[in-house]
Amino acid sequence: MTIPPSTNGATNETNAFTPPPFLVELLDAKSPTGHEFAAQRVVDKYVRDAAHSYAKDALGNRIATLNPQGSPTIMFAGHIDEIALIVSYIDDKGFLYFEFLGGHDLVIPSGRRVRILTKNGPVLAITGKRAVHLMSPEDRRKVPERHDIWLDIGASSRHEAEKIVRIGDPAVYDESFELLRDTIGAARAFDDKAGCYIVMETLLRLARESTLDARVISVATTQEEIGTRGAQVAAQGISPDVSITVDVTHATDHPDADNRKFGRVSLSGGPVIARGPNINPLVFERLVSVAQEMEIPVQIEAAPRPTGTDARAIQMANAGVACGLLSLPLRYMHTPSEIVDIAVVEQCVQLLTGFTKSLKKGDSFAW
Image (cartoon, rainbow, N blue to C red; front, side):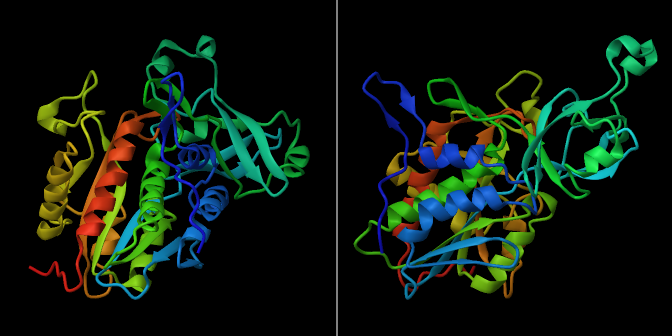
């Protein structure tokens, strides 16, 4: 087994923050749900040689295992798919219409550059709609419906367009990772490439431990954005004793966020630990205890129902799984420019590493 060099972020000689290359490559990989090839390749590159075993399945999950004879079995899950568009119709003038892959805010798509992922490579397109100058006062107050927006690839006819794209080709916004200031970054798909990075980076660091009781399985899951589908299959196959999903949650420290409605979550306030019926209470308490011992600041979020994350599927796999949910605070979810504090990404890795090292043979989370 070859242990690659650490991929965590660092501070260079000028004290400017350098984000982890593994994370940046994941963020820039275009991996619409059901078409996660680019992100799969990044995970393969950084993780395959560090794992005792490394597998893929029919849904495209990437499954990395350490200490295969260990006990208990802990499964980490972070999804690699992102929201996107899928070409559904080409009109006679060569304009493309689309359906949504995952949840979209209809005020977002208009006037954007996107890349359509075709069999011959990415194709640039512009999301078009009628210009504001050509709208009535009533129309200007309306949010456009999906069928009022199209993709313009510069084709002059359906015949020309069909030589370039096919029905079913996915498309993603053409936005890349950038640092705003210090450790604050913006990217198209922190949801949930950051979570995938966290669970895989945790495995890379645990691979350097000389002693480890637990069997550790980190999964880069697919198709979370359309129903936690990859996680469901992976959890059924693995049948873990305990699992922690890593995803994003809404930072509510911005204008127009009523804390009475949405709770209090700070972008830079530390990892967020969920608490509620989707969460095993013993896993929750262990996470909090480990965070306190490691002096990692954490925030608590109430989760009153099955969460909108892979944890909802994993908890109900086979005879049931003791689940935890660790979330990364994020602003502007499901937009082309989500914002995250990468210092909190690192804190999440440290917390998962500490949690795993706290597991001893015979530990049970039955309650």
